[in-house]
Image 1 (cartoon, rainbow, N blue to C red):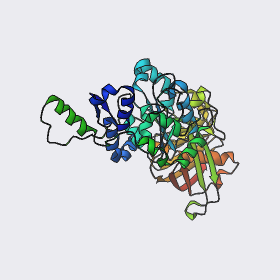
Image 2 (cartoon, rainbow, N blue to C red; image 1 turned 90 degrees about the vertical axis):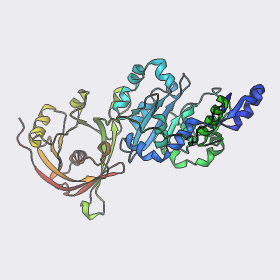
Image 3 (spheres, rainbow, N blue to C red; image 1 turned 180 degrees about the vertical axis):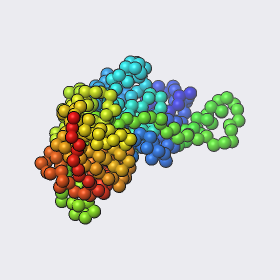
Image 4 (cartoon, one colour; image 1 turned 30 degrees about the horizontal axis):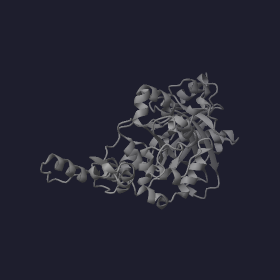
Length: 425
């Protein structure tokens, strides 16, 4: 028996091997049917990947030198470096042949710095289908995962699609001719913004409609054929395609980030005393591999960052232990790290921060909507203090109430108390 997913495949089979046509069964696509059955779980998958409030970008690569990972092994790192952390979550799905051809250890080694930068690398057996259902964009190649993403109506961009890799008359070949391209050597964020803005699902519908002739029905067709072949009565219960499980992943949040803070003093909201701080964060990890430092950023490092050199380079240090004496810790931290200009302790009430100039500021935070991965994070108060200081403004003039926006999350600071840091030793 020759099992096909679509009638068009039977037509192509008739051209290449007409003798096989009588043995052909158009049974749909059981893998894609599970993806279709999983769509109601989209929000659950997004929570698992840490993508709530962010765009989820899936990077998919088939195996071989002509696949995305073979042609552009640094693309994941560049995406991590160029896409703001609070707006994006990147998930990488590599073909099992990459994992087993090079070994899981090697793949993890290649992508270790990307994982430290907040990228989620799904294992080869399961997780990629959940990622597709959760995705806002798929960056891929001539592999089936990219095609499945397009079939779901997700915007796709081709970062690799070698000539002659697939039959141009096949659905994947037609996708290669119709889908937009992502140029890996050019700035990535503007391309992604444009791709999403210009996405029109109906453009690819004539191609993606060739995914299956029996959407959602493959289990029933295949089970009937199997029992018929075995000459056994078919069970009376319905044959169904189950949803894929919610992936068990541990999205990492970078402990060292490059932060750009823009202070908007023209806000008209009286509850914020006219100040809104716009914070954009990038992982610092990619700059260890030659990626340029984003313009206008400063290095913020948490004290549990494993790469200790970041602590020596940090301009802003953050400690997450509300049980310490904040003023004492800040004083010692500023002495121990001469390059640090702001040190902060996250407390149950908000954040306490001190400057190298001897100012001590207590921020009371009402709470941010979300709080995922530093969004709505009281530690962002330290970014505002750092930028206020760099602008040459007296710390005493810092508004008592303001808001901080990071991605689509908002932290509301309800009170600011300015004091003097104890004498440094």
